[in-house]
Length: 386
Image 1 (cartoon, rainbow, N blue to C red):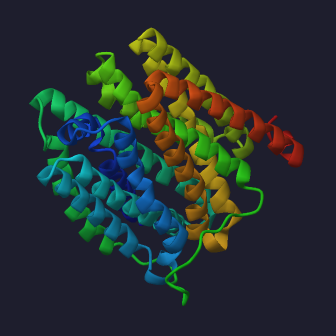
Image 2 (image 1 turned 120 degrees about the vertical axis):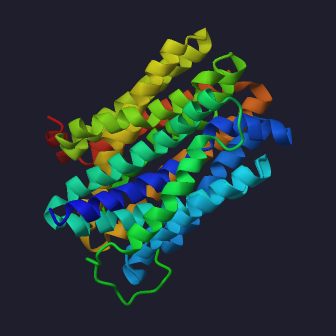
């Protein structure tokens, strides 16, 4: 019972950090129209999130080892709150870039410190359960923010500050205080403030898989909504973004029961299959196929692949869990950003559908190569797939 309250409060804090990240996603077209910019600019603003996150992961992934876990999580909440206030006050593409940068830095602080903190609260023997709690909280948050804004806009009509923003303004300050009052269960280390990520041995198949999975999620969040707007399906944007993450959350209990390699292989297969279905939906202008493909990719991105990868990185580096988590998210957010930026540039030059087809070709090629090399280099892993 003593562990339920702190673990629940930490999960709520991580949920709220993630909730702020995609809160503004249904308003991308509004910000773009306000500043008269195209698809490349929208995807650039989207990827500014990674520009804030990557330096945080690369240089501050182990910050919580020195400061304690609570301060980085509280700082992440404040960054998410400030970014959203800026967007409400100055709605434009330029401010979106700044806000996304701040949200990225916050995510980097929260995920690295939060994963280590949750394991310390629950105990080393429950490392996989701790990973499940972290993935569940962040998955719900990443998807819930976009859905909350979509629903708010449907109920309110067009608005620069939807009710979902107000909910964050009320929730975040209370959680900052709650987080700072959580018990200290970690032991601070006399280490440098700047600490590089750790990439545990034989974890690259998990990192590459998450990079592929999250690159697909990035396309679904940043590029697909532009296509939906063109085809008259703009009202479905919030739902698509929510499903792109929430279905993965629903799959996490099933992933937890599987060995990590088997869960990983499942994710490798589902991602290109789901995106192909989504692509077919865009081609035929079928919202049913688009939603179905989104659900399939989500089951991997935030279900089988996400949980297996976070669990594997955490288990293989128990003495450097925060820095290992940073290493995993370096993989994840390289995938989350670079293909999306490239697709935005292709979309402005050749059209959104062509950009999506090129992305699928890239995705399928890398998937086949990664699975082949993985099974050749680590044949013992094949036994775990049975």
